Image (cartoon, rainbow, N blue to C red; front, side, top):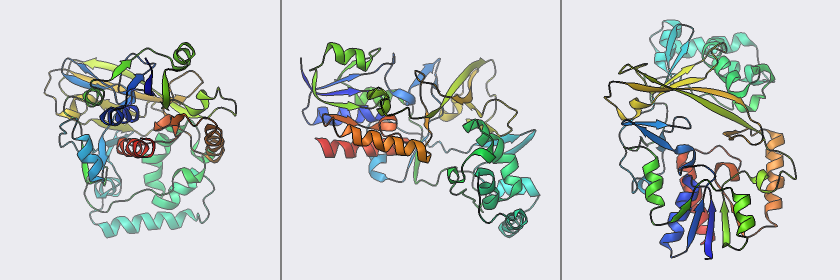
Length: 365
């Protein structure tokens, strides 16, 4: 059988495109190299706890059209992302707000907090930041930087902050209210029952083949579809002929614990460089679970190598220029539509993935 569209990748981008194509009467085949659908938003139900297998995913958006769209496929709870950070034995609220400043400096008013930050900025004497460390201190002062930014960022990137370019931190939002809601977006929540259910509904009635590598599949079925939506790595598609795009990788250590509540919050960041993981996720808190046990995941960032699962693109000047060269090369293959996090070499929040997929549909259908 020949299809109108072969979609490579059963993640959110591919699933939205597949759903919209089917709705318009197109025949669609979806393949994925993993043994499950839903890509990095895959959640696995373990005795009633929906475990975010590839890291914490909190849906948030200010785009009402996207919020209404995603709510067609799940009912969302009213979860608000309010992470906390642990530095040595001290606990701080995130994002940087009056709760954070009060704990840091034993102050009470926004005026005092602003004065303290301004005093530290001036004391730094940094006018032209040459690296990430100088950029951060020039924005928020030394105390916030050293306790809450330095170690976490160095673990995330695997580099000393003085070796990282200043542009990585363009701004650091400071909030002079006692508000621990991490996001400023109007709409926010977690799908009740996990994210996998959303993708199952999007792909309902569509042929899906997991454990299927694109290169092997297309070699055996070269004329399977008129067009291909490719959501894998754009450089891998072209056999890295122009060079390899760089990523950071994350791996997770899951643990089931015989306690009903391990850390009291879904997300706790560990900001010391000496602690090897960046954060601990306690999954039950995303859906207010009442189970008498819990499951936690420790998150370890590491260097990425070819053949491993890529997570965060390293969008520095060198990689962005290489990606643009691949975009030019992709014009030689008009039957291939590149999209999603890996196809666009871009860190996407989930709402932006939905937005981009819907735009791609409008452009190509």
